[in-house]
Image (cartoon, rainbow, N blue to C red):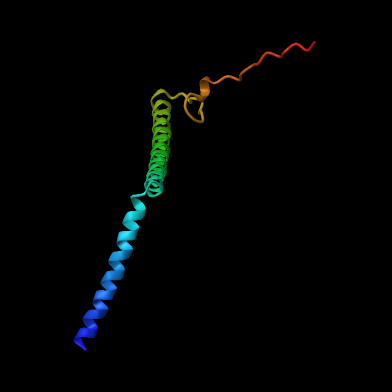
Length: 100
């Protein structure tokens, strides 16, 4: 009975090791390396995007705090702008092409 048990343990260990070896060999191929690199780039892009969104949210929050502070200290209501430098934006006029 013990021999049968150890035979089963050996078979299970052999299957597990062969699957692990096959997966490692697949990852070492050019396609496997490209897949790993692609996943890493996607993860990095997502992290950079979320970092940028958090920075923009922090900037907007700080800008709001500064507007409130100016209004409180100066007693002047400043125009609220959506986004960075929105108050200085002017509509862009484009010249029309002469038809002829």
